Image (cartoon, rainbow, N blue to C red; front, side, top):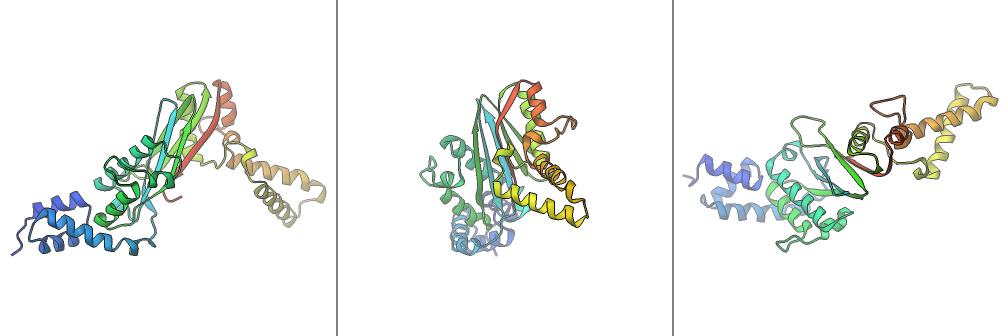
Length: 276
């Protein structure tokens, strides 16, 4: 008879994040010894790390915080929503985020290569966690912004999951309320750039070609084509450029106008959606 109880199974699951069947097998092999069972899970898990490398990570969470004119945003991914909402994964993500803040990381590569206080790198921490949790876990993206004012905003797309959308917005002038309003707007309307100057010239040219071809297909008069094309390209900018988007709370005004009236200027932003 196995030398462990249901409470032992629960404790090991909570401490490792491993599945029920794996935990039972480890406890059987370890004759109920929690420490040995943990080691067994880790060893078996590490053997499967390479196998998990090709798996898709489309779930996870984002963490964003801003303080003292500095904002950090990190996206940590896993394979299933079951793991994403688990305490083990959330605690791991928070540890990774704290490291990103501590080393002032600006990229995922920089964060993964950084060394934690216990001497292991963040990548080594993730590899060990992959082993015990049994899923591929990765840091996908990292953003860091600095400005006189930085606002952070997190949004849950589902009440039983951690935040799936995270935003940082940097502003000069104005106050915290307008910066937060713009951050919430960014979460909802997902702009891709701050100004139209940041849109790649090839992308703009392609939009012009598509707009002209569409107008001709619709039978629009040749003389009207330039105006129609320009209008549709401007529509593309209004959809993708933050400062040109109609503001969420006051659609008759652009984001740029709202910021201007508040005495503020947006200098940069970052927006992550899990798996996006």
